[in-house]
Length: 113
View 1: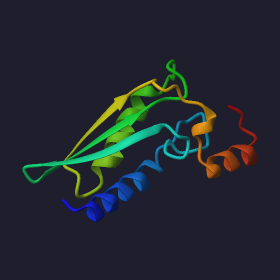
View 2: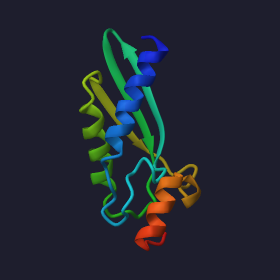
View 3: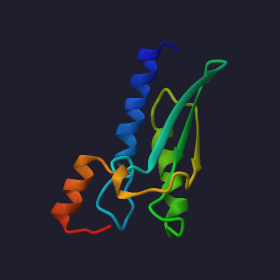
View 4: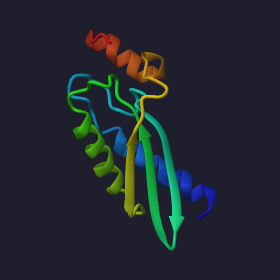
């Protein structure tokens, strides 16, 4: 698959991931910096998406739900046939990973991390 098409599909995945929110934080998981990697691999006309993500805390009470939602919205991209989401805590998440939009939203909402 050509690089341009891969980037186009990754953008669709990112847009969908921006619809997944931690219920305790008013920022989506992508802008929050929880998505470390989105990889696409084509094998025998089947497109696999591998996502490596983290959580704001290893003790996150909604960890399983966030992983499942990330997988669900990724599979909603027509070109993707299979999705695997892996959790990692290396490197640990910090607010430095948040996008500028996320930082502004947090400040505007009065939320503190």
